[in-house]
Image 1 (cartoon, rainbow over the protein chains, first blue to last red):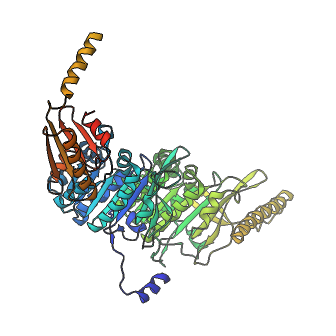
Image 2 (cartoon, rainbow over the protein chains, first blue to last red):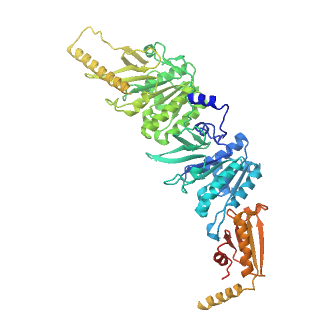
Length: 514
Length: 108
């Protein structure tokens, strides 16, 4: 933010001219689109989505900004192109009929041609120029450069390519030129990236058998841009680059409170409950009642006639409904009235981006007050931890901008709390962290609950007994005033103290280490 | 078999005999760009030397007739197309390599 201020004082009202692509997310990363009246190189391996992205750039230009377009196809046939894009929801026929887009198929058959001396690509220029005039095009796509290069002498083509770029600038069109990615240079020909003003690479990588598409802006002359790799997806609505980085910058922080659904837990959280729009993590070992806690929160929210989205990654909705019935939470009527919505999906079904995008779509539809993810640890198996962490952070940012309270549950294994990186990653990004634990004493297991952290509120540092009964969840202070102290009873208490001490210690260390 | 081959080669010889076939050539250029100017000069020299009196050369400027660039599938220019005698042959470049041009024109 500071930098922008400095710029303003130096150059008044300078604005780098950009052309919006209309592609969800891409305009945010580039800070307003690709350079106006300049060529952009779009590089990627086969199947990385170059043609689709280029085509969406054109179709959006027509549909959103009324900018006619020219598509020069060196690779695909015109009818095939129209057909392929139809399946992605782009109706090209209408645009072609209305003279909004002109698709020119360029046949390159090197074998028939005998080379007899010097030549240039003026024929391409003539055809392009004619096409541009025909529809008064503002946007141009050349797909793809490799096919063009394979047809001719590379030495001639290099100089011709440089000439093409400056010619495109002169024509005042915003162009995208696609090309395969090469090694060691970005492009196979090894020159294009130096002469283009903006270079974007696309990638489709497979990690743990799940493919993830990624986009990166390699260079952008004259503009600040996000330089990370951003995941993107291609679905029936075209391309969405996700996550959107602008999210989370200007989020408002509400001082309103929302009840956790359990009176005694609210009491521990400054007597009022969570902040609205905050993120809450419930972590604990298996069978400690994480889902029960989350469901009682959801139940309470729904009772106040506010929408709630429950994303289940482990149990099927019907199973959750049955199980929660046993602790007095009757979810059936809430679902029937549409106030509680379930999203259920197997984590392995698709990659994380698709999961979050699907959830995001539902969020935009039903506008919930609360979103519950149960459990996120199941998603952790679907890719490297760093990916998930950044993905979750951005997802939380997205929810925060929408003022949606989010609750995650995380399953951790016994005794390995500090060793579990997933938990570590998330706990730093949440506002409230509730820990549920099993404390084993003699022949008895006792559930306990404590608030590990809760930003911005006075919270209890007490460890409470956590009881799940047929009537719901009750938290009770740990019973310490036993009248009769039997030997076993005193042993129990010593152990209990030890257990609590160690668990607190480990968290203390963890927080300070960070 | 051997008979047949001989027969074919005879036919070819007849077709290639100078002074008997008329050549129809088309040269596609782009205005007065250096490559185009050279190509026009070169084709005139070649035609005068090898095809004197039996060729028809049409020089087409695709700046003037851009639609022809599409119908003839032109990307790189200049291009010389031998329309007749068949087979049709395309030659790309400024025609400075006379040997290649003669090969393309089937004149040895």
